Structures are given as structure tokens and as C-alpha cells.
Length: 124
Image (tube, helix red, strand yellow):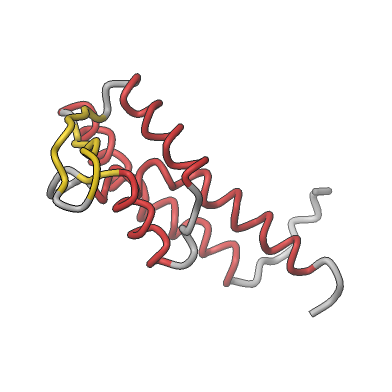
């Protein structure tokens, strides 16, 4: 690995994460409400989507403002009450739309990353 490669890789991963994190968080709430630390742990478990509280909590606030999630407080057996986030109908619709477009988007990117391309002679 050449000097600076890890920085470039981290930057590329961060940009990709920004583009899909919202929908991954919504997907984690597809089957049941989740609380913030639970979402963080699930994202950390994926490896590539690991992020911080400083990213997830502002995202959750924005999702709430945009009426994609709703919140409720629930008592916890292991500490203070927790704020749980659940999909609204708008959130479920946004997730469904992303789920529809993602395969074509992913496949289109894969074509550029994996297939050799003939030069068209056009300057880039």
C-alpha cells in the first residue's frame, strides 16, 4: 500500500457511507422500533457502516423532522428510559423506493468498476 492510500480509502468509504446510511438506518427499523445505541451497534457490526453517535443522532433528528420516523420513550431495565425510533408511513415509503432503485444503481456502478471499457475517443 502506498502512502496516503489508507486516507483515500477512508475518504471513499466515508462518501459511500454518507449516501446510504440514512436508508440503512431506516431498514434497521423495518421490523421493529430501535433505540439509538442499538442502531449504532448494528451499524458497527456491519464493519463498513460503522459510525459514531455524532453522526447517527443528528441523522435520527433529521429523519424525525422529515416525518420518516417517530419517537417514543420507553423504560429500560438497564438504566434510564430510552428513546425508540420507528418508521412512519413516509419512512416506509422512502425505504421502499430506495429498495427499488438500489439494485439498478449498484449494478450500474459495478459495471464501471469491473468491466473493461473501450475508449470512445472523447476527452474525460
